[in-house]
Image (tube, rainbow, N blue to C red; front, side, top):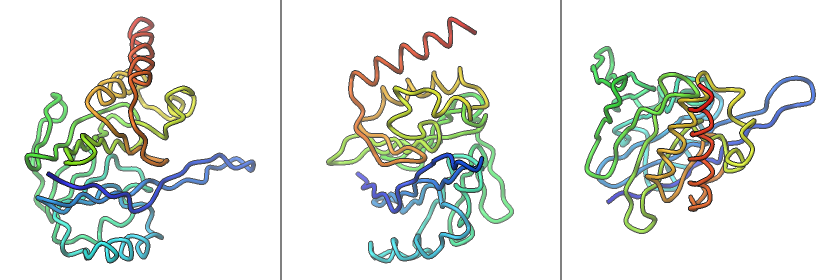
Length: 212
């Protein structure tokens, strides 16, 4: 089994001057493999290095870097991890080698018996979610911007205006909520998934499908 730790809680807020203040949630998975998910902006390298050090890890010990999608606040420090395999959305690479995997057919990419990467398009058309089985907390989904924050379950405007395909995103939000006990969203703290949340997400997905 693996453990998941949040190195930095993401946030996103509109500024009154017409721009957004935002940074992503950054997480680390330890156990069978050392994996970092979403590496924030290029100005945040010290946050990541120091947070890993507190957990007795350094950048050379990270075996996989997963960016849930290719936006700048999720890939900014990928180059700290030069011994790792990199998964950026649906692209898997090590140095100049690119590995073909049929994410577009809905196929998951298995890293080990406790960690797998699922295609969850919507926010972008090549988004992924990392699903982690843990000993003490059940299944944790690290979703990137599939979920912006817990509040976007009851307030859809927090995510759908930034979505490339709201119908796909809504379906994948419901699917992931049914698989996970906890969600680490792209721009907020980790939250527990309740049955009420699952029912609300199922209803939202049904509405999108009926209106398609």
